[in-house]
Length: 290
Image 1 (cartoon, rainbow, N blue to C red):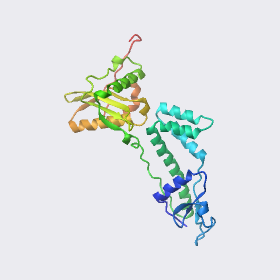
Image 2: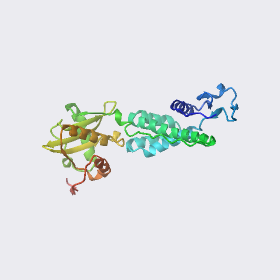
Image 3: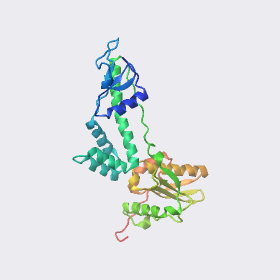
Image 4: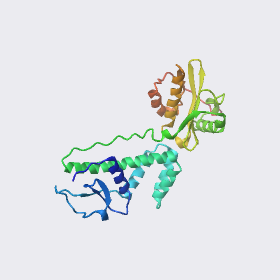
């Protein structure tokens, strides 16, 4: 018997696929998932000759491990990616170690669950389309997955305060050190806090990122845009810049200038989306003594 893959049924199939202890079927007559022992006769057929009970898509621990490998390889934050790789390299307790790493990084954990669900839904869609082909029906398409803002919605964007000084200075020193340039090349903004500064705070209250600018008449010069290494690769810097520009637009018309370090060319795409255009390339030679 044909059945409709409703959202509720899909969720039930997802949940049951991860149960490695029991065997499950879709009862096409009732449109629900049941355990093998609940089936009146696992080989029962309907009046049209089709099976009443259909086995769920195959899914075992090796499929779950493959998803973990895919997620780890594509994860953009190098610090967390190395921790995940170490978990996968263990000889035993891999799944528990992987879960422990993610539990220490809630933002990464949320992305993992989205990635995992997307992978399993893809398997369900292929399985259901194979059935529809047998029924002489057209295939259904995959539902688009919007995960870009999945993590970012948990961050809070707020003005910097004097209480943020220690965290802000620590993050700035770290970022300047990563550029291998003297700190005087990118000085910490003064005054602090200023009128054109925003911070990004994680759901747990951690200082995650900052943006600071100086306003001179109709010109706004962004002096720094920095993200804590733990929160990189999530699009947080782009989101912080976008929120900052929204506030500027609401306050009036300004010309915004940002000097982008050469090592940050990847961020240029985000600037173009915000209508920035490159106008000047600055070349600087720093002696070893400086």
